[in-house]
Length: 221
Ligand SMILES: N[C@@H](CCC(=O)N[C@@H](CS)C(=O)NCC(=O)O)C(=O)O
Image (cartoon, rainbow, N blue to C red):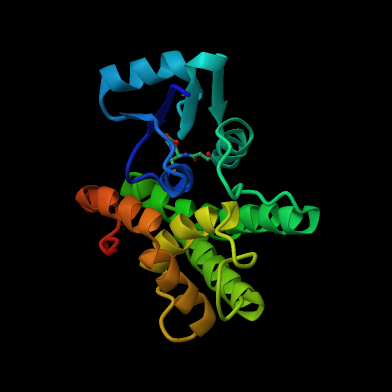
């Protein structure tokens, strides 16, 4: 299966797909996209005009697949990881997909709001929106803490799409609003995630770029 992944090592949504690829030892050609570099940006625009990554190109099947969860679904369908990243059991499947959405919507979106605001010119910043986003992150932590298992992974004993989503969501949200000691189950789960080989590799490969994070508080793996 000849696949190319267009991504950036610091980009949170790309971490989801990289973890799924590393988790299952799936071969792929990495293509790092630098949106700040005109040539790299134009080359990526030819592949995917919306200029959002990750994007997986499977040349053998003439498929260009965008959206991190859809890419992981595609890998499940055509690269046959065992066990699949979305369980076949219907009850485990809906739980996995639900937590994928919740990590994206409840943590990644407010986290992106804070990060993108820091990239704006000072005169166009949205201090009220940033405070609201930080409040939303803490509200999400409290909601998740109450529901989080003491052991294992998001959905049970198998590592799934939900865990792939949890990593960048918790990693960057924790940089902005530290979990501290108020959310012990979530913190323990976050530590278990960081010790997982696929996750440790993604964070290690992102580390050289941590200085590009636009807030004073830089990520630490
Ligand atoms: N819903 C998409 C989100 C993709 C996304 O927002 N990617 C960010 C990087 S983490 C991006 O491409 N940012 C570049 C930009 O917006 O210019 C997914 O799950 O893949």
